[in-house]
Image (cartoon, rainbow, N blue to C red; front, side, top):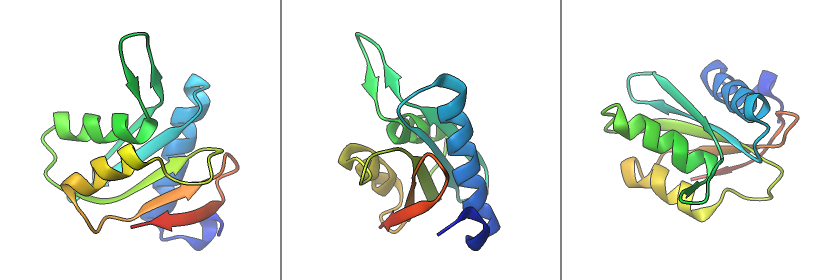
Length: 113
């Protein structure tokens, strides 16, 4: 599925996740949308003292801003599936929030719920 076939708000998440990944050169980029429509984005964090997937970092950014729930999330990665810790972080806030997984080209490969 291409971004053009998605709901415009979900396509925006893919675009933001791609930009986070591209800007930093990280393995992954992610974006989440809260229940008020605000978006938060992040890239993979890989420090000697801190390791976070892009999705974990995006959820952390949202939570640190006071978010209580998420509508949806997107991850841009070469991986074949959304990593479990990031998926769990999304579902800690909203168990039914879909997480789109797109390749580096922006094409959606799967949706995890």
